[in-house]
Image 1 (cartoon, rainbow, N blue to C red):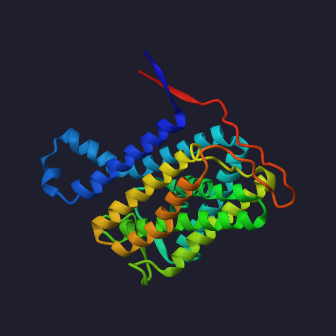
Image 2: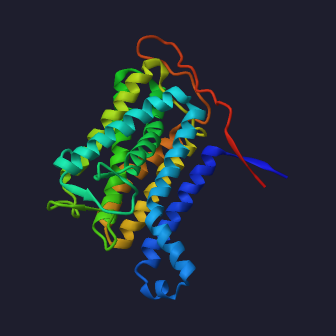
Image 3: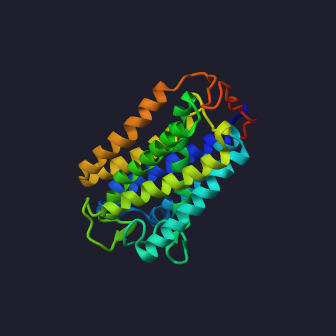
Length: 305
């Protein structure tokens, strides 16, 4: 008997499995040279391929999953209205950062995250900005059930950008200050090897592309979802956060990890459990008119046995 798995859930599963494989390699295998030496030739080839391509693979799966979820849940146009600014503006920030030091500070990417655009930024990095920014903002946007005027929208944008930045609190030390880095800093960092400027760059970049998306959507077309509908972005965010958290704790970076929990994981939990299970009528600031609830589009599926 065959059953259908929604395509966005399938890709999310592959995304999470790829991260688990990466954790296994970074935390358990790479530090254990005896285990590596005991592998057969075929095992070495599989492990080598996984370590070279695993970082790029998990981000590709994450971007596909987020895009398919958005297409189903909020529609193709609204998903593109977020995806294009998120990818375009984050890539611009990353290219500026790796060539001029603005807005994040002086840094450069090493190998392991895929082909580099202009020999500077792996093509997967803007994809990660998209799926994590999208996940953070769809969760924070549940606050707009109280209203869709600019006050509520700015609070949702600020919280979404803060949740995105908190992921970097946890991720950056583990990916740049350990024995197996994926990027390196070329200036003295005040916060566990990272300059404070980096966090302002993250928050600013996230704020800009979330604001652009919110402007394109318009006041009366904000994607305000119920608890069941935000389960997917909540799991996407939580899975990536846990990946970074385990790496940071394993490396002994406890303060960045705890800070990330405080301003990222805690808001996620609070927002998820305070979001109503069913859609409710949302009053705008201009008039007591309900915002139309998001309809579920036909689900794209992958057949499995």
